[in-house]
Image (tube, rainbow, N blue to C red; front, side, top):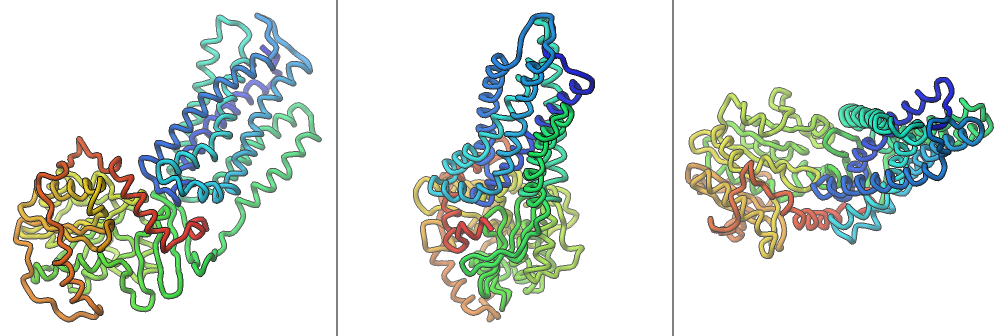
Length: 527
């Protein structure tokens, strides 16, 4: 054990607390770094967790090896003087190196993510996580075993000492997770958080140098902290690329939100996925699926109430309101609701917008609706899996009037392996509702598929009326040509207990990301 003077021992414990916090903060921030390109799917989380575990394992092993070589060992004796201090300084150089590597992440992330796009969602997410986060995580992983060697002088107490130090590091991880996930990411943003984290590690190193009266060496921290502060205090400017302009950008609990303009078109992007698109001149949706949903008004001409789960920019809600319906909208992300009002012309009464989870709202609904629309998508480009189960569809049935209609917006393939998702959604709906119909929106092999389900008949009860939407009559007529006839023997019945939608959805996510890149290029997503 090295002789540690005065408060130095407690400072090493403090260092372990902060490096433990840094590990979990970096893992959480990783989803926000990768999300704009690959969504926040099971594969992104799996990639980050895998890289974190492997990097920490390497760090623990390497930290122990380095400690055995660098830290003087004499059973029952303490090593003082220059040799001992040199060994401790190496610990803090590891901390400094970790800080510098994190400092570089905002600088290199865009290039790394663009370079991994050709690998697809699974390969790209794993490769980008490996390139971006392996080095800082290995360095942070080295800290704890190295500190154990520094602070342990007798073999008979090594277990207790190691337990104490790992406990301190784990408590730091807990604190970093809670503070980052619940407060800092939505309040500060990803890039600023990375710079703050890097700056904190640089400060840990600099303070140790000052404690050892190495004032000249500690001055190295000045330009490094200046770089970090420049990143933290930099004002987010409206960015441009290829005729696109980012009008608004913010972090939220549920992903990075961007409002992107090009000429007279506007999109809402959540973690790189296009969730709403409108023509700014007319306010009408750029996505045809929203017009398909309007057919419910011709199936139930006397309808009065509707519920839309998944607000986005408010396109579906606005169209239903145009038919004279009273519409409740459920949106889990309060910042999405704010953006809908500020940038997409959404002006529903405050009392009609409910900030909560869709399933929670429907489970506690105190009224019944003529129509319920499921139009909720996560940043992974797939519906939240808990909204697409037999149990959920049963709860929705309980919130519908006797012959009410459920409309579900989904994505899927018309042929190949990817058909299992729409087939399973159709079969699951059929397990709850006696009448189910499905319509493909695109003529291509991949695109939106709209499902209608009801206890009553699903047929037009009034003729298509003239509307202010050019071509709407033709659009409705085309639906009959693009109706999909699924068999109730295809796919599976999705339940809360067995729900493989997210695992199946990688093909869907990859196809969706390709579609998004066709109108929102990678350089725009990186802005």
